[in-house]
Image (cartoon, rainbow, N blue to C red):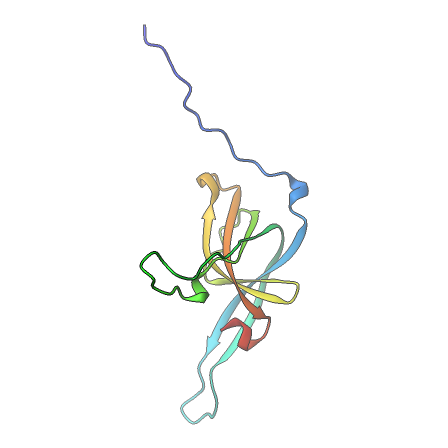
Length: 133
């Protein structure tokens, strides 16, 4: 008779008390000026939702690869936000926390369980047009 072995992975959990910070998730729409308009494009932010999050900072050791090639500062993860899973949160969204704007670089559905999202983000500056670019 065959013997069964339990290979079920351990379920990753997070304590609800660890979600201590409220963050705002925004969408951004860019509108281009008309043919006769003067000026640059316009950016319109719309609040998608406010959620509770666990926030972790990431130590940036170097901005160079092993080959000596410089990394783009806008592609370096500076913060990790863990939130409850929401299918509407993706890399096209922005996070605002304490007046700072963060671009979501990667949204990971932890263990594909549809329970938690790990949002790897880059600090872009204050919540203004210049800070979001």
